[in-house]
Image (tube, rainbow, N blue to C red; front, side, top):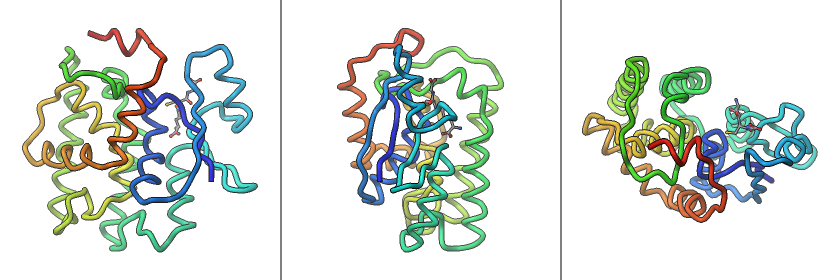
Length: 216
Ligand SMILES: N[C@@H](CCC(=O)N[C@@H](CS)C(=O)NCC(=O)O)C(=O)O
């Protein structure tokens, strides 16, 4: 399989299937198309007319959009429990993942992912705090109800943890105050070898985007 992604510093949507595949040791090659370059659109168009990454190529099958890729992987690798095995946990994990995929716009706009950011807060509006509070409440609920003895949202690492990995990066990078249980969960995610690999690659990238890197 080949996963087409964008900058590891900035591309939150690329990070989601990438960290899932790495954390679950799914073999794949990657192609990184840097954003905001003169040839970005034409390079992405070679893989998807939707004009967005991530895109997964599996033989003659092309899957675009982060959550579709995750669903495709879950369908093709049922042995891996990409979604939790328990039906109630799975329903909760899918709902929470879709809530991320279709929502939290104020948070996404005000606190864009920048994996290279040294932790520092930025002023933000109340609707960002509303999103932060909702995510913290949902993390705690998932862990309390379904976490069991595991360290992730639903016990073992799952698609939901992958969908929220960029939120962990945002909370960390913008020094968002969070309850201790959320802090502990963030530390578990940031300790993953897959996280460290993505972070190291992001730090080594040559591209510089003032809209993210000069946020203050
Ligand atoms: N809903 C899509 C969003 C994908 C998306 O917005 N990707 C951005 C990079 S993070 C992109 O490809 N941008 C291309 C461009 O701006 O030219 C998904 O979940 O994959």
